[in-house]
Each structure stands twice: as structure tokens, then as C-alpha cells.
Image 1: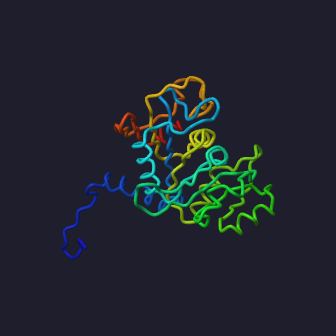
Image 2: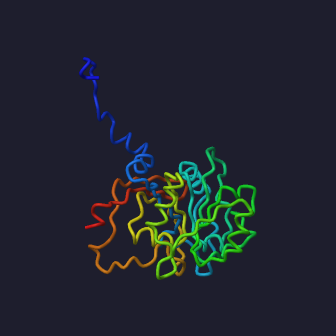
Image 3: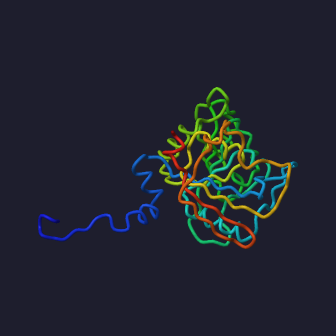
Length: 253
């Protein structure tokens, strides 16, 4: 265009455009989805009581914000523990948008056949990620309900390696994933560095003993602490929402 005498400016509002299209940009550049880690916790870092009770940690306004986050992602992901404890639908409430695909990490295929994610009218929007050790009969029964079962090779600990998981989801055309828990999934995402953005809803509550939002990351010195950048803080009713980008460069050093 310049060779034809047309004035061309580049880089205008580049940072804002990159932020607006962050999921698409990462997917186009890497073929991997953009990973947002979402945590709802008490002030002392608990996502449930010592008995496992977790409804509700945060306020209704914070929960609505969480549903708006779902609407901005291609998929929402939880571990099997969340399904067994809470039996969530993982749908949208009081917000408009395309229903994200529902992904459950379940290496031993423990998901009950009457769980909401595979027994409701939206079963076709569900992907169960399991290992090659899973019962083939149960896999077939889940498929018959309309859900997808993604069978991947587990590591020596019986877990699905996250790098393999994100690659497979990218090949399915999923450009962004909202990771909602539980604690084990939070921990593994952070431990392996498979996080692009962290969003934490903090309620002004104290539980003392309870389920930690993040488990042991193997950090023994403060200078090993994972660092976040581009911090943003917002008040939601009585709660606080903190959003930040995972600082890949510093956390890899």
C-alpha cells in the first residue's frame, strides 16, 4: 500500500488490541488455548470448609461475574473432585453468551452416569478427559449419552500431562479455557506454568482449617514465588476480584 502512495500507520493501540484478542492471538501463534485460572476463596485462602462444604464462598455479584467469565471462554474445565462434590451444570446463569463446552478431568473415569454434565440436555457440550486405563464399557455408555470422551495416555502418577491436554484441546479448536477447580487442578496448572491469566475472587470470610485454594507448589524460598503482572483490582459487593497475567518470563527464570 505504501508503494502506491497510501499512508499506513501500524501499532496503533497495539497493547489494547492484544488484550482484547488475547485468546485468539495465543491460539494462532501456538495452536494452544489461552488458559484463565479462576479461584473463589476466603480471605485465608480456602475454597471449602474442612468437611468440603463450599456453597457459597463468594457473594451473588461475584458469582455473576464468574458466569460472565464463562461466557467469554470456549470451554470451562473442572476436575472430577468438583463433579463428585458439587455436581455442577457448568452453564450460564443471568448472562448472555454462547454456552462454553464443559470439560471434566477424570483419569479414572469416576464420573457418575447421572451427573448433570452428562445427564442434562446439554450433554453434547461435555468432554470427559480420561486415561487409557478407563473402562471401555463406561466410555461407551457416556458416548451414548451424547458426550465426548477424550482418552489420553496418563503419566506415571496416573494423571493426564497438561501439555498433552492443552495440545489435544487446541486440536479440537478450543481457543480459550476457564479453569474453575478444584484445588488439585489449580495447583497443577500453576506448578507446570500452564496459566496465562489468574482471576481470584476473595470473600471477607475466615475459615481457619479448610481446603486450600492452591496446594504445594514445591516452593521453599520466597524468591521462588510465582509472580503476576498487570494487576487489576475490582470491588464486587463485599468481595474483591483480583485479575493478573501470569509472568511467564520471570517464573521460568
